[in-house]
Image (tube, rainbow, N blue to C red; front, side):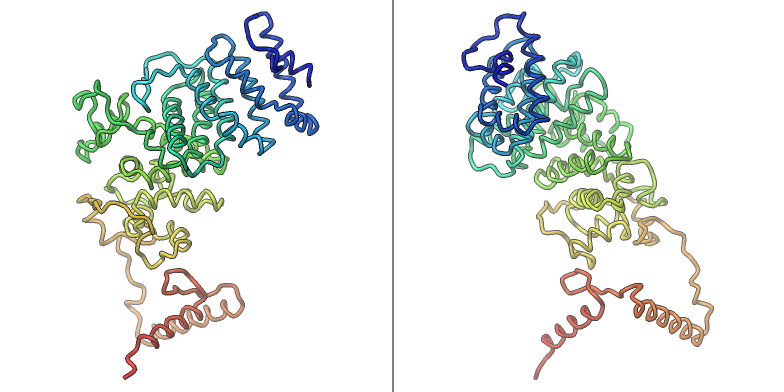
Length: 472
């Protein structure tokens, strides 16, 4: 270990990286250290005793402003990631003692060649070249190391912490708006950026959107909210332009996240690892930031026009998310339903309009909202506007399936009263048999909206009636 530390220029006596001829030896030594630390518990313990994390940060500072040594930075960062993954104590050391958050953020700035135009805004060249493979690998390793450093950072306690996280979020916004050398590398880069954004306190995520710059006039970038609802072609044009704007705010990064989410849905596998982080991120952004929620609502849940198909049938983002609401993976269906619920401002009637009662029943049961109402969070009171097509179809929409159904003939219309009574008793006996054999359990709603066995629900309602009755 000592020999490898010396060859990797991690020894205290080495204070420069001047000899280019030594760079291959440094890289290979760092590779050896990565393999040894990953596979040997004794090496992991020695890394703590030798204070390897501090030495790696020192080497990063030497590399910070240097070009042509991306391989050294890449394997230095990989070793730092492994150490912070295998030892939780190193995470706090990196965060506070070694100032790892600003250091690693500066490494990302260097990899992306960021030029700041404002405190939390960077210049984006949409026509610029993609990142080189070396820069991309270096950025990915830095993102992974930063994830470990910030994994417990949900709450910001100091103004300086808030500033650091906002700078990091601005760097991650830049990351989302650039591309790597290949489509696979771009997706990997954006995936790690999404994971890291999940660690950023939600109050600091407002930097993902920013007001139009002075060079972007209303004529150069038509806003989505100014376009008539039925002009979908014009809206698509705006979405494909470089400046995606909503309410005067640049929404490019949010649109990238939405596109990334849809790609992960289309993959059809590994939803828990690949999809839930971006869904959770978009949910929290929507809950905390009104402009983000309204933009996502416009994209995911546009005003309903054609209600002839079930909500889960089709190829739109809404259709795909509604299908996830009945996914076999509990975590996946919960976060998909929560995302749509937040876009509907946690109003049950609005959610049912877009999903149908059958698809939303699981979420409503878990939240105690089967009887209707709204969630606990406060949202603005601006009302949704229904299209004329939806208003005309609304009386014939099946609330369970959420789509338009032709009126069906009532099978009991031609029955006599004796036949109706016979069929009703037959149904009661069948349900009673199933209940006694415990093949099903009749359930009812408690006063708080949650479900419970029917006997318990009835007893609670009887108690309420007794206490509220007039005793005179």
